[in-house]
Image (cartoon, rainbow, N blue to C red; front, side, top):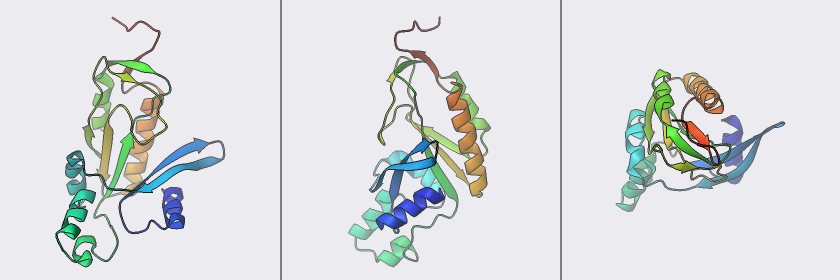
Length: 176
């Protein structure tokens, strides 16, 4: 998180919605891309409300409606009342979803808020190098940033072991 925050500051993105795409290397994180953008998708509304945040689209709508920036952004910063993280699934190779049973593990995470747009059995997934990802979005919301970090590590561990989505790699027969 500190690396991503520092990258944003160096790019001049300090007061508004933004996202990064990081790659993990042997030497640590490497910035692949960073952008300031709007996310108008209403799927974000529930976790943002749980975190005490206005959605990015809501802030923009208020500004376009003529509200003073101070009223929309507080003290000129987009500060959360709680901590929130959005995790996207990483798939190592093209595959077909054969089971969703492992997704129930997400409820074990203390900060788990919601899973939006999960893939369904029969859906194809592939390795992505962009913000758009297969598998849906997992939102983690909690008062303690450390809890979110621990839960994100657990999520990635389950994911690396293939314990969330049941996959049949393309070219393999799906299990019966």
